[in-house]
Length: 326
Image (cartoon, rainbow, N blue to C red; front, side):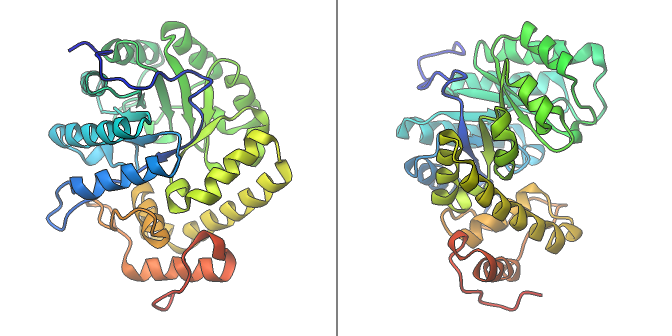
């Protein structure tokens, strides 16, 4: 099947690849197997809520813990549910080696994904002269699909503005960068410069600062913790209602600082945090389980977060802690 196939439902451009895309966690059964029914229901719920797209295969989606056959099932479920709702799906294709990423990108394209995302291989640092060839090879496998670069310090290498320009020159389908802390896109000057040729996605709590510099969206967890708050926040960004944006971003920052102080010392990863946030919010039901050796949140952690919501931001959570936060 050709990559473009007849299955791709949405053609993304820089004008349309914007907003808070739901970066969903994977649902697992008690037997540590993919809970496809529960996951599909979560994807469908996000589409119905009006989120601009759904994304899987990032850190929250535990790409590093998936066998290839599991990757196929998760990617297919995401694409099919998004297609049924008329929404685009982005599939993360990161791997520890070029062929692994390329195979995933090819499969995502064959399934009809609207875009693929990929970080640099992260086990051994990629040399400067191999950065562009790596992204070129993945783009070739994706056969024209829009590409997002997932830039993270976990890849042991951050890219310069010039390297981003070189990737864009070699891969015209490079349309979006997911910028994380410690990378150029998370600085005002870097976001402004990158925004001249790609869309910059950052954490929602940074929209107050970086939305003014051109940031165009987020691979978001908070949007499925509480869709109305984050979708309204994005509307405010688009309207340039910066006073209200700043106020909500300050609340999100306080929430993330609470996460850091309360749970980070226990070794929580992105996925543990996002399963916790989803469960406490109650909009989607993906459970708390994540794959080891990384620790998962507990029912008491959910109660603790709900207690924080009750005391500090009632609109964000359902309220009513059921256990003591300790």
